[in-house]
Length: 342
Image (cartoon, rainbow, N blue to C red; front, side, top):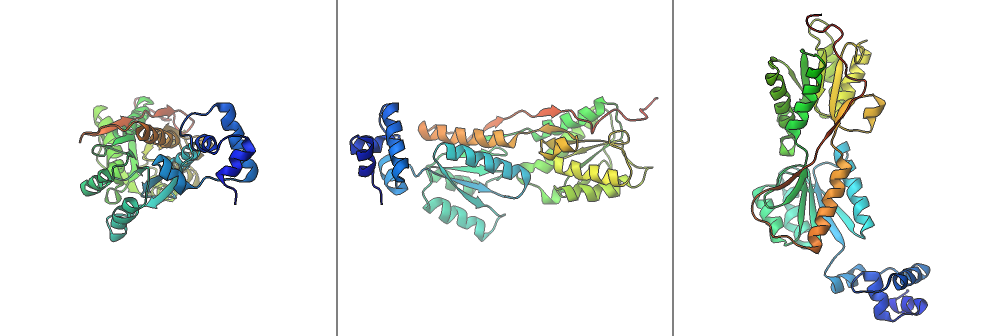
């Protein structure tokens, strides 16, 4: 098995110099570092993580807790975080965190506490007070995505403002008969994503003097969920709305598929807008508010690594960074075919 001494001999440097070049701890010239890296690659030398940890105090491993893996937003965040961490030489250990249960407790009591991580990233998880205390006691940097966590630097979008803007877009086109198809309140996501987007919809409608009674249809946060509700809501032309604000792009795409199946033209007969920036949005020409999950993932990694290099003193208040969304106008929305007063 190749050893650091073999690398040093091939590169023509001292063993200590080779160690500094590969660990990044201590100064070596760029020319020397390149020679050492090339030598290590040539003989297949890989530094022992355990040995490096003893020298640097770093494990080069980050723990990530997340409630879903297969859903689009979360998979996009995970992929971008993994890319950013690998680029910096870090491993990522993933924990799919269930709802309150013994399995969830074991993640905090055993895995995060006993395994050595340089830091932890919480994605879309509203931590309990006890869980926050537990993570703070680990003495490792913690960064969150999705909403405020006490004493933690977190990253999120403003779901209320995004929903309001999406609804205002439909109102500005002249629509009056607008409905919201969104997440079931009984199946609320952490950080109240479902109810916050419903709140933004209601606020925009009330400010425009529009009625809100009977304007909300709950569904699963999926394309099939939107499709099923679309078949039900759009089936009767006498009660069909002229526009729909969908709480996610996946719901919106399901609605568009249902409309096409019923012979409803989008946007001539029905305007549809979503939130997310899903890759399929462009294919379905969906007007949407992009929330850039990959940017959120990269920023979370950058924030965590910054805190590793320069630990910050955190008080008990929230440290929330609200990222902007941007409206992407496509052909799924247009003025109503027969506007009021026409």
